[in-house]
Image (cartoon, rainbow, N blue to C red; front, side, top):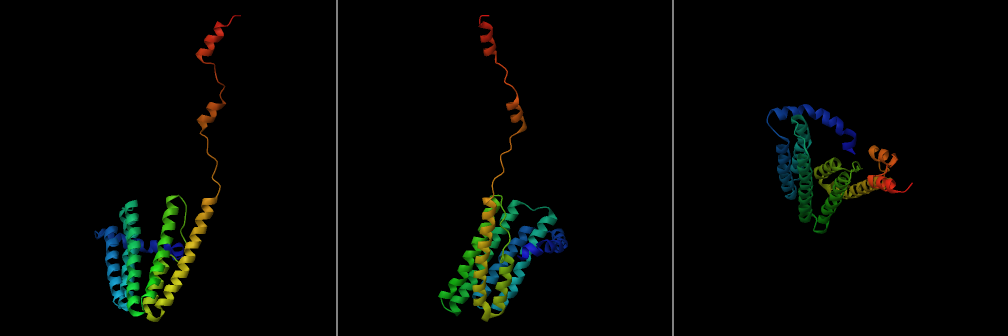
Length: 227
């Protein structure tokens, strides 16, 4: 939802920053790797109960993820390889963050509640897969009530207020599931639309419209016929 409404404006505002970083020699891959390293630090902090530090690290790890695209466009190095690397890094980051939350909850509230972050992770992976599969089919699955930006914000609020962490996780699970249903319905409608009729090339239609002339065999046979 946030990506659909403000993504264009955010990219426009980050463009000068991406240009400055590009001039300093920093590449988009450097920023993606930095985001992964900071995600590891965030997960470790959360797992050890340092939730406030986890909030700061979470906000810091979101910056490289927001800037790598701007640097790639400013340097002219945007490519399918970079997009693939960024998507894989996002999935690893999601796993690390929710894994750290699960580790913390297993020690603070018991083992069963630790399954809640893994449930959120499972639905999150489904949402990401829906978009990837739809794009591979030439369809559009973007949008939804809770995309990755909303999940990061919600998780940050849950870490900032420890008493709200479990309710926030339940809310994330419900809204992410609803997003998965939204994307499924959107792609289903697109995939169910009737396909356009195949376009016949002009040279074939012209060829079929031309009268067929007798071949040399037919000509020779007609010459042999008695008059």
